Length: 316
Image (cartoon, rainbow, N blue to C red):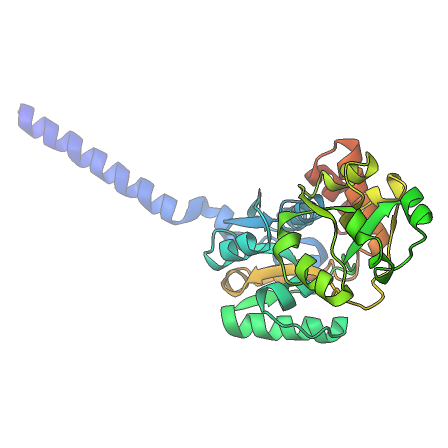
Protein backbone atom coordinates (compact mmCIF):
# COMPACT_ATOMS: atom_id res chain seq x y z
CA UNK A 1 0.00 0.00 0.00
CA UNK A 2 2.84 2.36 0.83
CA UNK A 3 4.45 1.84 -2.61
CA UNK A 4 1.11 2.21 -4.36
CA UNK A 5 0.40 5.50 -2.55
CA UNK A 6 3.84 6.86 -3.51
CA UNK A 7 3.25 5.97 -7.16
CA UNK A 8 -0.05 7.87 -7.14
CA UNK A 9 1.64 10.92 -5.63
CA UNK A 10 4.39 10.84 -8.27
CA UNK A 11 1.78 10.53 -11.02
CA UNK A 12 -0.07 13.61 -9.76
CA UNK A 13 3.19 15.62 -9.55
CA UNK A 14 4.14 14.59 -13.09
CA UNK A 15 0.77 15.71 -14.47
CA UNK A 16 1.06 19.07 -12.68
CA UNK A 17 4.56 19.65 -14.12
CA UNK A 18 3.37 18.86 -17.64
CA UNK A 19 0.50 21.33 -17.33
CA UNK A 20 2.86 24.03 -16.01
CA UNK A 21 5.31 23.55 -18.90
CA UNK A 22 2.49 23.75 -21.40
CA UNK A 23 1.35 27.06 -19.94
CA UNK A 24 4.90 28.46 -20.06
CA UNK A 25 5.20 27.37 -23.68
CA UNK A 26 2.09 29.38 -24.45
CA UNK A 27 3.68 32.45 -22.84
CA UNK A 28 1.00 32.91 -20.22
CA UNK A 29 -1.40 34.12 -22.89
CA UNK A 30 -0.42 37.84 -22.88
CA UNK A 31 3.19 38.96 -23.29
CA UNK A 32 4.22 37.35 -26.57
CA UNK A 33 0.86 37.83 -28.24
CA UNK A 34 1.04 41.64 -28.03
CA UNK A 35 2.86 43.62 -30.71
CA UNK A 36 4.80 46.49 -29.20
CA UNK A 37 5.02 49.67 -31.22
CA UNK A 38 7.54 52.46 -30.89
CA UNK A 39 7.09 56.12 -31.68
CA UNK A 40 5.51 56.93 -35.06
CA UNK A 41 3.71 53.58 -34.88
CA UNK A 42 6.79 51.61 -35.99
CA UNK A 43 7.24 48.08 -34.60
CA UNK A 44 9.67 47.97 -31.70
CA UNK A 45 11.91 44.99 -31.00
CA UNK A 46 10.19 42.70 -28.50
CA UNK A 47 12.94 40.11 -28.22
CA UNK A 48 15.21 42.23 -26.08
CA UNK A 49 18.81 41.22 -26.52
CA UNK A 50 22.10 42.87 -25.64
CA UNK A 51 24.56 44.82 -27.74
CA UNK A 52 27.81 46.56 -26.93
CA UNK A 53 28.80 49.91 -28.41
CA UNK A 54 32.48 50.75 -28.42
CA UNK A 55 34.02 54.18 -27.95
CA UNK A 56 37.53 55.49 -28.40
CA UNK A 57 39.27 57.03 -25.42
CA UNK A 58 38.17 60.65 -25.76
CA UNK A 59 35.09 62.60 -24.73
CA UNK A 60 33.45 62.99 -28.12
CA UNK A 61 33.57 59.30 -28.97
CA UNK A 62 32.23 58.28 -25.55
CA UNK A 63 29.48 60.90 -25.82
CA UNK A 64 28.44 59.71 -29.28
CA UNK A 65 28.38 56.13 -28.07
CA UNK A 66 25.98 57.20 -25.33
CA UNK A 67 23.80 59.11 -27.80
CA UNK A 68 23.46 55.86 -29.77
CA UNK A 69 22.78 53.93 -26.55
CA UNK A 70 20.03 56.21 -25.25
CA UNK A 71 18.32 56.43 -28.64
CA UNK A 72 18.32 52.64 -29.09
CA UNK A 73 17.12 51.88 -25.58
CA UNK A 74 14.34 54.46 -25.81
CA UNK A 75 13.00 53.03 -29.08
CA UNK A 76 13.57 49.27 -28.62
CA UNK A 77 13.77 46.60 -25.92
CA UNK A 78 17.49 46.12 -26.55
CA UNK A 79 19.87 46.53 -23.62
CA UNK A 80 22.95 48.54 -24.58
CA UNK A 81 26.36 48.79 -22.93
CA UNK A 82 28.95 51.41 -23.89
CA UNK A 83 32.53 50.30 -23.37
CA UNK A 84 35.55 52.60 -23.63
CA UNK A 85 38.42 51.25 -25.71
CA UNK A 86 41.73 52.70 -26.87
CA UNK A 87 42.52 54.13 -30.28
CA UNK A 88 41.20 53.44 -33.75
CA UNK A 89 42.69 50.02 -34.46
CA UNK A 90 41.74 48.66 -31.04
CA UNK A 91 38.13 49.71 -31.65
CA UNK A 92 38.17 48.33 -35.19
CA UNK A 93 39.62 44.97 -34.12
CA UNK A 94 36.97 44.75 -31.41
CA UNK A 95 34.33 45.29 -34.09
CA UNK A 96 35.85 42.59 -36.29
CA UNK A 97 35.98 40.17 -33.35
CA UNK A 98 32.34 40.96 -32.44
CA UNK A 99 33.46 42.13 -28.99
CA UNK A 100 31.50 45.26 -29.89
CA UNK A 101 28.78 45.58 -32.51
CA UNK A 102 29.15 49.26 -33.42
CA UNK A 103 31.12 52.39 -32.63
CA UNK A 104 31.28 56.01 -33.83
CA UNK A 105 33.93 56.40 -36.51
CA UNK A 106 35.14 59.18 -38.79
CA UNK A 107 35.19 58.94 -42.57
CA UNK A 108 38.75 60.23 -42.90
CA UNK A 109 39.98 57.71 -40.33
CA UNK A 110 38.27 54.87 -42.14
CA UNK A 111 39.58 56.07 -45.50
CA UNK A 112 43.23 56.58 -44.55
CA UNK A 113 44.01 54.71 -41.33
CA UNK A 114 41.96 51.57 -41.95
CA UNK A 115 41.72 51.33 -45.75
CA UNK A 116 45.14 52.85 -46.42
CA UNK A 117 44.14 55.36 -49.10
CA UNK A 118 46.25 58.49 -49.50
CA UNK A 119 44.60 60.82 -52.02
CA UNK A 120 42.51 63.51 -50.32
CA UNK A 121 39.00 63.57 -51.78
CA UNK A 122 35.80 65.50 -51.19
CA UNK A 123 33.62 64.58 -48.18
CA UNK A 124 31.03 62.97 -50.49
CA UNK A 125 33.62 60.86 -52.33
CA UNK A 126 35.30 59.83 -49.09
CA UNK A 127 31.99 58.67 -47.60
CA UNK A 128 31.05 56.62 -50.67
CA UNK A 129 34.43 54.88 -50.70
CA UNK A 130 34.37 53.88 -47.03
CA UNK A 131 30.70 52.85 -47.28
CA UNK A 132 31.30 50.54 -50.24
CA UNK A 133 34.70 49.12 -49.30
CA UNK A 134 33.84 48.39 -45.66
CA UNK A 135 30.71 46.56 -46.80
CA UNK A 136 32.59 44.49 -49.36
CA UNK A 137 35.57 43.68 -47.14
CA UNK A 138 33.98 43.12 -43.73
CA UNK A 139 30.18 43.40 -44.07
CA UNK A 140 30.28 46.56 -41.96
CA UNK A 141 27.83 49.36 -42.63
CA UNK A 142 28.44 53.11 -42.43
CA UNK A 143 25.08 54.62 -41.55
CA UNK A 144 24.18 58.26 -42.19
CA UNK A 145 26.64 60.99 -41.21
CA UNK A 146 25.77 62.96 -38.09
CA UNK A 147 26.61 66.33 -39.64
CA UNK A 148 29.87 67.58 -38.13
CA UNK A 149 33.45 67.39 -39.36
CA UNK A 150 35.86 66.80 -36.50
CA UNK A 151 39.03 67.33 -38.46
CA UNK A 152 42.39 67.67 -36.79
CA UNK A 153 43.89 71.11 -36.37
CA UNK A 154 46.88 72.68 -34.65
CA UNK A 155 46.02 74.87 -31.69
CA UNK A 156 48.06 77.34 -29.64
CA UNK A 157 47.29 79.90 -26.97
CA UNK A 158 45.86 82.98 -28.61
CA UNK A 159 48.64 85.17 -27.23
CA UNK A 160 51.25 82.81 -28.72
CA UNK A 161 49.64 83.06 -32.15
CA UNK A 162 49.76 86.84 -31.97
CA UNK A 163 53.32 86.88 -30.65
CA UNK A 164 54.59 84.52 -33.37
CA UNK A 165 52.56 86.26 -36.08
CA UNK A 166 51.27 83.01 -37.58
CA UNK A 167 47.92 82.07 -39.16
CA UNK A 168 48.51 78.88 -41.15
CA UNK A 169 50.29 75.55 -40.83
CA UNK A 170 52.83 76.77 -43.39
CA UNK A 171 53.71 79.68 -41.11
CA UNK A 172 55.13 77.14 -38.64
CA UNK A 173 58.03 76.21 -40.95
CA UNK A 174 60.39 78.81 -39.49
CA UNK A 175 59.36 78.41 -35.84
CA UNK A 176 58.38 74.74 -35.33
CA UNK A 177 61.91 73.78 -34.24
CA UNK A 178 61.54 76.07 -31.22
CA UNK A 179 58.16 74.72 -30.17
CA UNK A 180 57.04 71.76 -28.07
CA UNK A 181 54.14 69.78 -29.52
CA UNK A 182 51.63 67.85 -27.40
CA UNK A 183 49.84 65.01 -29.22
CA UNK A 184 48.23 61.64 -28.63
CA UNK A 185 50.35 58.56 -29.21
CA UNK A 186 48.02 57.56 -32.03
CA UNK A 187 48.50 60.89 -33.82
CA UNK A 188 52.28 60.62 -33.48
CA UNK A 189 52.23 57.24 -35.23
CA UNK A 190 49.46 57.57 -37.85
CA UNK A 191 50.39 58.44 -41.43
CA UNK A 192 47.53 60.94 -41.52
CA UNK A 193 49.01 62.32 -38.31
CA UNK A 194 52.41 63.74 -37.43
CA UNK A 195 54.63 61.82 -39.93
CA UNK A 196 52.53 62.89 -42.91
CA UNK A 197 52.03 66.38 -41.54
CA UNK A 198 55.78 66.95 -41.17
CA UNK A 199 56.36 65.62 -44.67
CA UNK A 200 53.63 67.72 -46.28
CA UNK A 201 54.64 71.00 -44.69
CA UNK A 202 58.38 70.47 -44.29
CA UNK A 203 58.58 71.32 -40.60
CA UNK A 204 59.64 69.37 -37.52
CA UNK A 205 58.87 70.31 -33.94
CA UNK A 206 61.63 70.75 -31.41
CA UNK A 207 60.06 68.24 -29.05
CA UNK A 208 56.99 65.99 -29.09
CA UNK A 209 55.21 64.94 -25.90
CA UNK A 210 52.71 62.05 -25.83
CA UNK A 211 49.57 63.18 -24.01
CA UNK A 212 46.19 61.72 -23.17
CA UNK A 213 43.48 63.43 -25.28
CA UNK A 214 41.86 64.83 -22.17
CA UNK A 215 45.09 66.43 -20.96
CA UNK A 216 46.25 68.18 -24.13
CA UNK A 217 44.15 71.31 -23.75
CA UNK A 218 45.13 71.87 -20.13
CA UNK A 219 48.78 71.28 -21.04
CA UNK A 220 48.82 74.04 -23.68
CA UNK A 221 46.72 76.36 -21.53
CA UNK A 222 49.21 75.99 -18.65
CA UNK A 223 52.19 76.39 -21.04
CA UNK A 224 53.52 72.87 -20.53
CA UNK A 225 53.54 72.57 -24.33
CA UNK A 226 53.33 75.23 -27.04
CA UNK A 227 51.14 73.52 -29.65
CA UNK A 228 48.63 70.68 -29.56
CA UNK A 229 46.91 68.56 -32.19
CA UNK A 230 43.37 69.58 -31.35
CA UNK A 231 40.01 68.34 -32.52
CA UNK A 232 38.12 71.08 -34.35
CA UNK A 233 34.91 70.39 -32.42
CA UNK A 234 36.44 70.55 -28.95
CA UNK A 235 34.70 73.18 -26.83
CA UNK A 236 37.82 73.83 -24.79
CA UNK A 237 39.40 75.71 -27.70
CA UNK A 238 37.31 78.87 -27.16
CA UNK A 239 36.87 78.19 -23.44
CA UNK A 240 40.64 78.16 -22.83
CA UNK A 241 41.26 81.14 -25.14
CA UNK A 242 43.09 79.01 -27.68
CA UNK A 243 43.33 79.67 -31.39
CA UNK A 244 43.64 77.34 -34.36
CA UNK A 245 45.76 77.50 -37.49
CA UNK A 246 44.52 77.03 -41.03
CA UNK A 247 45.44 73.79 -42.80
CA UNK A 248 46.34 75.76 -45.93
CA UNK A 249 47.56 72.72 -47.92
CA UNK A 250 44.43 70.71 -46.99
CA UNK A 251 46.52 67.91 -45.56
CA UNK A 252 43.80 66.46 -43.36
CA UNK A 253 40.93 64.58 -45.03
CA UNK A 254 37.30 65.18 -44.02
CA UNK A 255 36.43 63.53 -40.71
CA UNK A 256 32.64 63.33 -40.70
CA UNK A 257 31.30 61.12 -37.91
CA UNK A 258 28.84 58.26 -38.46
CA UNK A 259 27.82 55.00 -36.77
CA UNK A 260 29.92 52.07 -38.03
CA UNK A 261 27.89 48.89 -37.49
CA UNK A 262 28.32 45.17 -38.07
CA UNK A 263 26.11 43.98 -40.91
CA UNK A 264 24.97 40.89 -39.03
CA UNK A 265 23.65 43.10 -36.22
CA UNK A 266 21.51 45.02 -38.71
CA UNK A 267 20.24 41.74 -40.12
CA UNK A 268 19.17 40.74 -36.61
CA UNK A 269 17.77 44.17 -35.72
CA UNK A 270 16.91 45.94 -39.03
CA UNK A 271 14.99 48.63 -37.12
CA UNK A 272 18.33 50.04 -35.94
CA UNK A 273 18.99 51.47 -39.41
CA UNK A 274 16.07 53.89 -39.28
CA UNK A 275 16.56 54.60 -35.59
CA UNK A 276 20.23 55.60 -35.91
CA UNK A 277 19.63 57.42 -39.20
CA UNK A 278 17.30 59.77 -37.33
CA UNK A 279 20.56 61.44 -36.24
CA UNK A 280 21.50 62.34 -39.82
CA UNK A 281 22.61 65.97 -39.99
CA UNK A 282 21.42 66.66 -36.45
CA UNK A 283 24.83 67.63 -34.98
CA UNK A 284 26.82 70.50 -36.51
CA UNK A 285 30.33 71.57 -35.50
CA UNK A 286 29.17 74.15 -32.96
CA UNK A 287 26.67 71.78 -31.34
CA UNK A 288 29.28 69.03 -31.00
CA UNK A 289 31.76 71.49 -29.48
CA UNK A 290 29.16 72.61 -26.95
CA UNK A 291 28.26 69.03 -26.02
CA UNK A 292 31.92 68.14 -25.56
CA UNK A 293 32.48 71.20 -23.39
CA UNK A 294 29.44 70.37 -21.25
CA UNK A 295 30.88 66.94 -20.45
CA UNK A 296 34.46 68.13 -19.92
CA UNK A 297 33.72 71.14 -17.76
CA UNK A 298 30.49 70.33 -15.89
CA UNK A 299 31.45 66.92 -14.52
CA UNK A 300 28.16 65.53 -15.87
CA UNK A 301 28.11 62.03 -17.31
CA UNK A 302 28.15 61.42 -21.04
CA UNK A 303 24.86 59.52 -20.78
CA UNK A 304 23.12 62.41 -19.00
CA UNK A 305 24.31 64.92 -21.61
CA UNK A 306 23.34 62.53 -24.42
CA UNK A 307 19.82 62.14 -23.05
CA UNK A 308 19.37 65.90 -22.62
CA UNK A 309 20.54 66.50 -26.19
CA UNK A 310 18.18 63.91 -27.68
CA UNK A 311 15.28 65.37 -25.72
CA UNK A 312 16.16 68.89 -26.93
CA UNK A 313 15.90 67.87 -30.60
CA UNK A 314 12.76 65.79 -30.07
CA UNK A 315 14.15 62.35 -30.85
CA UNK A 316 13.11 60.92 -27.47
